[in-house]
Each structure stands twice: as structure tokens, then as C-alpha cells.
Image (cartoon, rainbow, N blue to C red; front, top):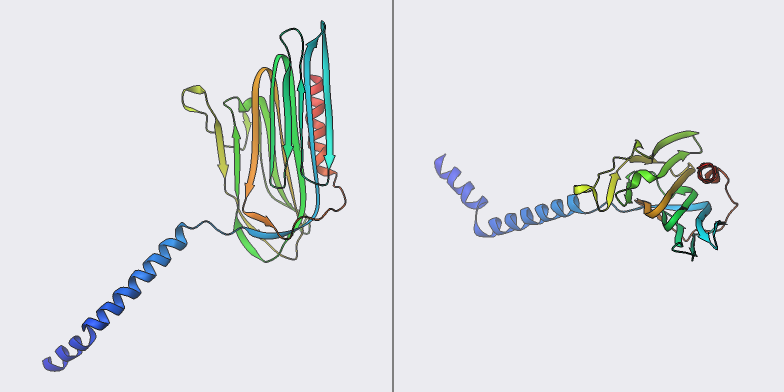
Length: 256
């Protein structure tokens, strides 16, 4: 019995088997670590409809008068606008806004008075496959994020159900802003909602951001990661829901 056991162990652990086992073990470890550390691939989607809009405004002294200058842009394609005003004396500034496929950004630096910038996008899409996807919502601003407001919402149009909605206005909201150390510098926040998608459903993504500056510089941006438009977005009918948020922000601006 003892001889048979030793013969079995000798056959099992001969040099060639040890090398093969070690090679297999290392391969499994490398693949496992590589898979766990690699970011999830974006979910491919088809864009059905899209609308982008921006609003920029400055209020600067010019020839002894406070002169408001503003304009709105609405487009079925990504849009940006940059309004630069030279005021006298000692005034002037810049307000710019940008609305892309998965990002919205606003910036205003107006001196001796005030400025406003707002951007919104609204994307209707269908996934190309059934998949539960971890999305990343990235929020960034200077340390005065409370001088702005923004939101990002995903709605299942087929099921008539809101999947999630995150936003902030001033100091309140559901965005977990991380203030900079010492009170100055950039502020940021990140949310990673795990979202189930069905290829038979249509979804609506709405992103809005807006800021007000008063003799200073303010900015804010929202980005979404985890989706990829394939093929390139095609131009469809304009949507109207996203403009409600932009219009509300404009009314608030003019009332202040």
C-alpha cells in the first residue's frame, strides 16, 4: 500500500506536471486580476432623438448704463456658445456654455456686475443589448459650487419609470460635493448608479447645469461615462422636456 501511494505521488508531482500546473495557476491569477481591475466596457446605444441648448448672459456697465446682453442656442447637434463683452469703465467679462452628448458645462467670469451661463442636453436612446451597466456621473466645479445648480436624470420611457435623478441647487441636493481643503480650489463629486437596461426599451437622459457669477468667476460641469453611441447620432425630431429646466433657470436669473 505504501509503495503504491509513493508511486502515485511521484507520478503526480513530477517536474513536467509541476511546471504545467504553475503555468496554469499564474495564467488564472493574471487574468483574474486583470479582469477585476479593468474598467467595464461602455454600453453601446442607438441615439433616437437629441436636443442641445445653451443660454449665456452678461450684465455689464457700458457708457454709464448697465447693459444686459444674452442669447440662446438650440440645436439637434452638440452646441456651445461663448459671449464676451467689453464694458466701460472697469467692467466686461465672459459667459460660455457647452452641451455635448454626455456632458454639459457652464462658465462665467464677469467683473463689476453679473453673468449667467446654462446648458442642457436631452437624449432619447435604446441600448443595443440587455445589460446591467455601472454608470459614472462626474460633477466638477470651483469651490463656489453653491452659486450654481444642475441635475442629471435617466427615465425609462417604455416603462414610464424614473430610474434615477441626482442634482443640487445651492447647498441642497443629492450630489455629494467634496469641498477643497482650505476652502479654495476645485470641488468634485462622483456617483456610480448600477442601472439595468433592456434593448426593447427607450430611455431619456436629461442633463442641466447653470451658474451665476457676480464680479467673480464661477463654473460647473457634469459628465456621464459608461454609454457609447454606435453608430453616430442621427438627427431626429426635437425634444421639448429638457428646455423646461433651462427656461426655469432663465426665469430665476431674471428675477434676481
